[in-house]
Length: 337
Length: 263
Image 1 (cartoon, chains in turn yellow, red):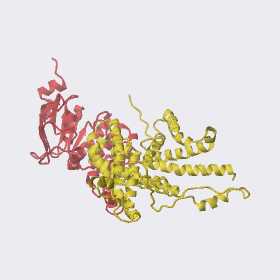
Image 2 (cartoon, rainbow over the protein chains, first blue to last red):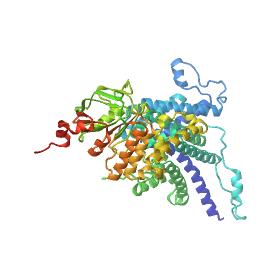
Image 3 (cartoon, rainbow over the protein chains, first blue to last red):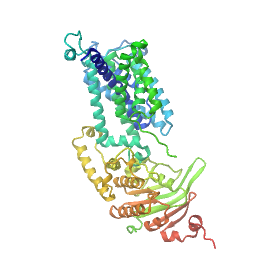
Image 4 (spheres, chains in turn yellow, blue):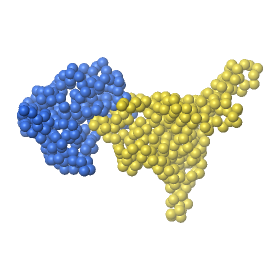
């Protein structure tokens, strides 16, 4: 294989991996949008909050330590004197899942319940408020410093893959092999598993059917005996768990910090491409954006001075809005006159 | 004609119901009852408050005044999903199916009130959840046979023709095995053949499943043939209540609804 081709392949491969990470965030949006027609602006902050909570548990931080110290003049930070000796990672994940379910319950109880039958824009505004609240609340609970997240997921370039791909080039070239981050591969595998589990659950269980029923028609769902409140708690819980997975992956990559909540903005073009109501759409949209922006940077980037990754996704989404506003897999709304 | 109802055995009693939206009075002081096993029709011109009445029985609207007694108990103001669990199922005037889901899934969703394994068993799928699915699937297949919709079992209902959608919606309501079935214009927009089928189904449901049925219908021929008793509403008031023959010969009804005879 020629060097040119190998380099392109490498770019595509890495694009796919990045795309999976975008899909993970977009998935959380789609779940909530389908079930309640709410565009949940807080999804990105939920990723941040979930990751913060996980790190907090794992490293043995005391929640609200700063607040407690200010009020009582104490000096607490961690519940174990040994900073590294927090909690078992698995236990920390389980506890974080419980926190996210509790969070879903609180959102339903204090936000959604009072906004039933309101216009979507009202609910959207409410989620913006929720996003700001959670941002501050997360900081207050766990502190605003950047935290490394290490769950023992392997990371760094794969030497094995480098060795394998090196042999693909002609023998006399100085090709050193393809780079692929093992963490990205793990993220991809976990994302695929998550989608499979979610799909099976929604297709073949009673609650899954209830979720789809609510997504389809609220009124009809009520008459067959489905409680909207319960369904909303379940949906927000699942979105919270998806946010946790996304938070773990992005957090392991770049540390748990405020910028984590901004990946929500990257999910927007993914949703416009894939359609707001489609789970496969979120996956395909994420992959297209991931590969698209990497290839664009690789081919066109040098001609325009680089840094195209910052805007490529949005421009692509803009074109999509012109030609296929419902997205690749979205439902086309035909108004009968 | 359906079963001869057991006299004095009331399934539902509506007492002095008044409902208004802001300044608009929709229903004023309406009382009537539904006996076990009967087919009860609610008729009246457009805007008479028929659908509002159904919405009250089903819990979408909460009347400002009046009481509802269901199955011997006075009902407190409840959410529609709880009322569904007490045994009231319904269909809608403008079909409210889960359009993206298959016929089978729509019917299975109708059985949600009867299924009670918790979410963790469902997530595991094996064990109680699987047994429950199979058991309810059998019941749903019986309903599919009964309504003769075998061929559209896997079709997303959004793609079905109108008459078929109405039939699936009836199926979903039947799947709930409710004590009381509310049908809001089950034959609206159907052709003659579809209407005959639907009449047959309604009578058979009443007969075979011992289901009490309250229906709203504009086709007077159908109403007079099907129902045991008829209540007539007009502008939120009750005009008449009785057997089809009594109602047909009631002068107020003739004047207000069926049209004044001009000499």
